[in-house]
Image (cartoon, rainbow, N blue to C red; front, side, top):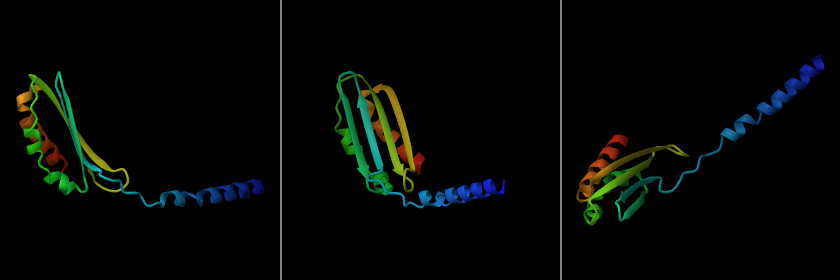
Length: 125
């Protein structure tokens, strides 16, 4: 019986010696983990823009007004989907917030998207 106890003790000591090795790795930083994606759908068109930022401060300071003002969709109703993704640490820790606004007049896309982006950014801060 003592022989089995020693064997079990040796096996446990050997197996526990490797536990710390796997957890001591330095996590890798990703690239452009701060991003903004806007998708505008209508009956006849689909417009998608995605932009990455080096820091969350750049993302918060980015103004989409000029780009949104240039959109001219001839359809009556549109759907706007917006995703804001911000890196909050290292490895795979993110905050991602999405919003979709459906069946709005296409003429109001710029104003609705601008307000939605501001709300999403405020929610993440």
